[in-house]
Length: 195
Ligand SMILES: [Mn+2]
Image: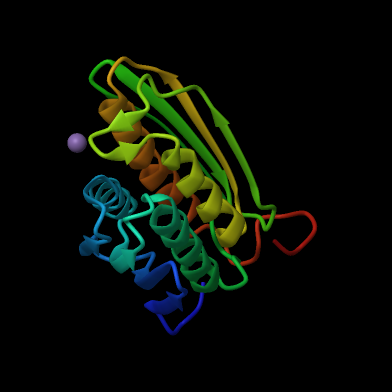
């Protein structure tokens, strides 16, 4: 955890332009505009349920598809989170949430130690939600975990409606992160003495 929050990060390539403003211990003031409606919906849920102050403005090569935009937003948000956490001392480190949305149930588990790892189990029952390719959901999570330098397990336990399942997983991630980011003691929670 560092003093100069919020973190501001920008990334510009020939494929995407991304701006992220993040305060992980915020007041759930969230404004998302990525040009991808479904992603905006999911990131708004993530920010609000995590209790983040989160502002994201993104534009991308939508004429190709949404892949670059979704992945690059995950990269920049992950980098901002990593920077915001500093040495990660004094944090609960682990967080878990199993969260329903109607008939769907998703479980998300995180470990904030610097062990970038992503495991995704389960499947979404359709290939598209509106114009959004559902295969981009694990792509986003992977980019977030690899750049945030944390372990992320996303387990889609069951469900019939893809929108419900996706929504349950993003909300669960918000709650899991909120728990892992909660203050706990003074030093790093590790027998190694460092995270
Ligand atoms: Mn919804």
